[in-house]
Image (tube, rainbow, N blue to C red):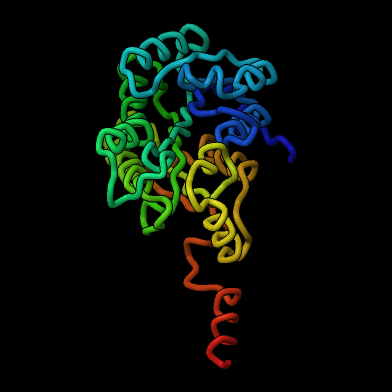
Length: 273
């Protein structure tokens, strides 16, 4: 992919990169290619679970470890970001974890403490991040904020379970914050991404079936992490300066499909038999 300099001179923070399969990692690589400088952040536990230092070294980025569910951590993070870059132009929120999903607890029998933690990590963290970016004066007027969601926010996917609720809340936060950020010229959007083979995705029971279903239903097939990175930089750039409060589907056409011939044909053959 050629560089078009879409983010030349821009600075930001990218939350959620864990390893090379992470969507946040792909967004960071695309942002770097387009001329951006940025800080990287993840929860302190990611120090031993991932390889964020590798991305930091390759991109020349500082790593600021912070738990996005803790106000103190986020306030400190944005103060440090201001020391590195002054005000920033963009924020990428690619954070999510379904605690009940990981522990194979069915939706009908959720552990509500874990459920609350899922919502806090996967959705409320975006609210906190936006709040502290404004409170500390770190976010420049005219900037862009981006998060990652999934169509499970709008439709029921049995194995997606509590994460569907978390993504629905996340998309609501995008809309509600967006109506308030406009006075600062700041826009906020969500990319609704195809099922993607990430560490987080692999933690969902039945993920392989979800992935294959999406791939067969989508006219273009599933969108991968690299193409999501390419799409993300357009939403961080000035080219989309009038786009805000949107959930934008990056899913190979899945969101507009009813049913695909790949699924109809076997059914027709069965009925004929």
